[in-house]
Length: 445
Image (cartoon, rainbow, N blue to C red; front, side):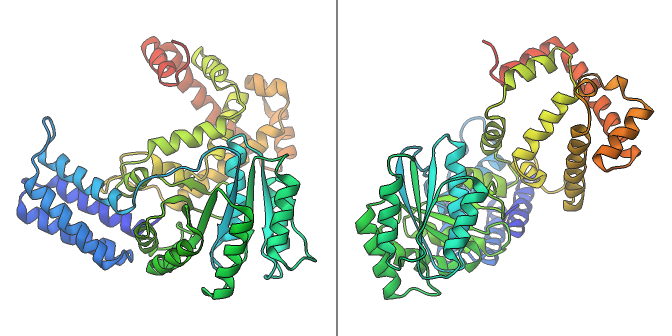
């Protein structure tokens, strides 16, 4: 989870509210101080923290709860709403034909983000291309080319041309009729310099991009504010991408400072892989910080993972009581396609303090076990996948040898399958629950 320390502190504050006998002015002032401390430790701007604190205290002391809502629920809602307000309004990039110009300093993760953005648009059914507009950094061309190959999208660059504007114009002219989204990687610097700003302005004038995205490393904290303002003044930023938000305790500074300049955060990077990239939704983000989960993001991840698969057909077969190793394999495929188990767990509600936390090592052990199970199933025949009951000692030995595992690992898989099968059979036997599940999955009328 991003910003673990801040999340734990805020969840501890909510626990105080939930467990309080009375919600009075003394409690309100106490939780306001707790939230102040948590936000300052996360490097959120001091002025912003003080303004935020005053709003919470004033609303909590003066506003009356709506009908049907308790004082505790009302205060929690106020905390939630004011935290979301710090981050500004949500904005999604349109899913359409467009040119996107990426800007930022060296070391912010700009080139890697180009690949993640291309992956995002590919999942949406569009055709992206990456253009190498950084002609100054020696490794920039090769890095973007490798990323393009990794995410399987077209690439354009010219090692011999030292005029960035010409490279970008040539790339756009070559691909504008055959692709939907043109993503232009531009040069950075170690610090803001006139030369960098001038080149960005020239590329901007020559290409007239639909979107200008600033990439900022979340670890720089409050320095994000001045950076965002300088780039915004130069090209008119339409969105901000925060990278490496999974590995810093200071991300609150970048989150709040970026919002201050009026350019919305559109994506956050949460890891090194192309899929570790999320649309930024302030309310969903705050929900996760407070332990309330983010079901919307979870459903979007599941939808992406299921794309191209007949989910309804599989669900109906499982609900009818037929559950094969093929079905279990598809389930594991979907889970792995949604990202790490830790990220999935963070999107689920109900993680307030007091509940047992699943250790990261346990998560990693489970993920490794699921990967091993898939390798084992890859070594099975279609007949064995459809009818696991036929798998006896000789088959177990052959499957284990083919998967490069021990016999006990194959037996463990079969035991896990039988538990899953009995669970599915129980669901299929409960007519009321079966109808409810199918309705929730929106299959049938």
